[in-house]
Length: 448
Image 1 (cartoon, rainbow, N blue to C red):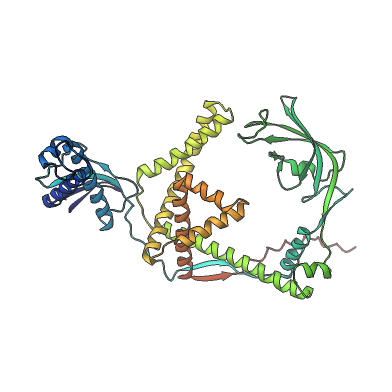
Image 2: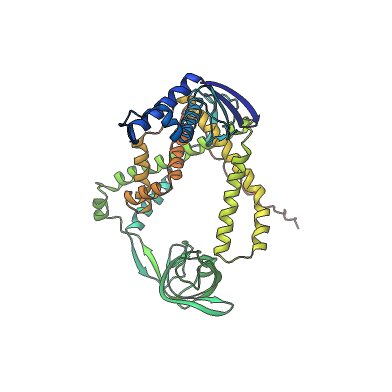
């Protein structure tokens, strides 16, 4: 096949494909031969029907089949030979073009392509990151967290603080009228959610309270909340504290050490220090990758496919409309909100797309790929984190194949970020010391 590529707009190309007459004739012969073997015509044994009879009966069908095969093959070859790097399926520029078994077949398709740009030098870069260090206070805090995880919840008469649990009776008030009520619910200060209702300001309102304290805050329920009176609505929530409880950490004794397989407290501290160090190093690496990627994106000029940007912004707007409809919000209010947020969303979409294409190019330059085993591992990890079975997560991906493609891209870009970081020099900098408060001014006493 012969290809002629024209750029008709930024990231939009027209590819004209010419298929030699010999290839066209071969495709027709193959199609008619297949039909001849499969069907029986009166007076002829299978495979023995005359070609002219087959052409008169099946000619239009065969022409459509041959045309489809040649167009598909032309697009595939154009991609494989890097004539184009498509972002989607092509559209035929001339749908009425007819294929003739006696002539060369010429057709054209248009396709949105990946943007072309020069990738800046990305190896040997320097990036500043915070100095990684683990203090004794970090270690003690880590041990305290372990103790709290195995602690007990006990009644307290002390004022409520973050982390405490309040046993509450609560009621939903809509325009001052009770719409829902529940008793004996547990609310942990700092969580922000009570029985599926998102609370605003509850932590601040309850802090310092005790049994008998009553506060009213704003609440919001999700559109799919099973309680019809609450679903998708905002309302007042009245909370009455019936009892207060506080987590008491498990004692740091021999039994605690044995449960965690430590011989003594020093071994526990060393292990906690190692864990915290690894966590801080992972966070440092993530920050380095983010800064390196953003630095590269800031150096390149990438013209983005307009339809890709519009599609992403349109998808955001459609999700907003569905959420607003489920919440029963007025169309005028939604229109004003969309207009106010669209410029911000568009800017973020464009930044995300540029980052996507830069990471794609790094992955391509390094020959990176994602194996089936890595995909399976990622799905199993998602299942563990969500508390679902691997089968449930797999079924979710089967129902929406686009999400599997997104997961594969996410893993590939993670490898590209890692390659970018490993090729860079990380310069660790200690956090600046807090500024000293100015000394209080004094007025010298006058002598008598």
